Length: 387
Ligand code: FNR
Image 1 (cartoon, rainbow, N blue to C red):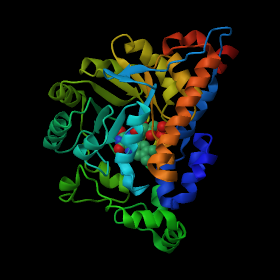
Image 2 (image 1 turned 135 degrees about the vertical axis):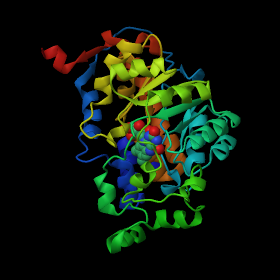
Image 3 (image 1 turned 90 degrees about the horizontal axis):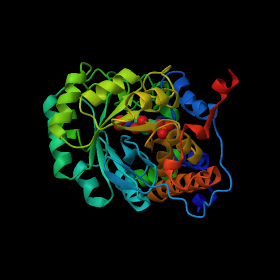
């Protein structure tokens, strides 16, 4: 199959680009405005170099760790992303199954195309449910109760969408509600006949978790993300975060933290984890790269709280660098979505396998048999080293 020719995440990205209509591919691949933060996430990894230690017995390397009180075999987890059914009929269930088989945690987005309960029923692995603060506080409570009954291990509260990001590729492609694909867009979909066949066979795309509320929405909306963000509260504050943490009572990550003072506030509000994240460069263009924000946040709260990072991870070496800088583990978004877009569940599994084997190889080359062997002495920062 085509997957046999995929040796890294970029290969999966190319395969996804080939199978998906451009509007769908760009929805995954793109970021806000000039995509500077999206590129910055990648560049920040290049600014950090690894300093390997030699003549260590690395015949056994184990990258296992824990997150949210769950044992995970790999130091990276599945980041929450919306509407997977748009990319492949395997959708959230396929991603959750692949994550379970790979021994890592799956996060279901509020904006998922599969319900909280259906995802729970189809994978035995660890799971988190991601929520936003909704205009309607009762909806937040409803989600907390559903996640509790379906035995999710953790809640992730995403705090970097007070308003929708400005994703210009989506505007250009007519990824709007209702879709405004235009003649070229329709021709492009027809040209991607494999995706089209899958799409007509698949169950209709719905926002399974919020459909019952979205029906009531009155929307002044130009983009898909705008439509969705309209459901979110723009007036959420740390008091709301605290009340959500209390209501949930279990492991809770606050996702989208970039300032050390906000990290302290997250801990004070009752979070057991923060995700250092700029939403993959899809929200505030010009925001600091995740890797650049990480050390300050680790120094501020690393001893009181789990610190995770996402944004721009495309290689095992990126994961190793983040952990050496103090992250407990990472999340990946686009890497598994490229796999899903390329070949469904098998493509997701390929993405996770590629990242896992790269991580193991980089640990061995670093002379690290466990994640605990990685610390800041393993790193050199190009601009710091030069000064
Ligand atoms: C996202 N992300 C996201 N985050 C979130 O909290 N809720 C969501 O519904 C979504 N949806 C979403 C859709 C798509 C297509 C992408 C690419 C991303 C952000 C995601 O969780 C994560 O922060 C980034 O994807 C990490 O960056 P990388 O790994 O994609 O570079």
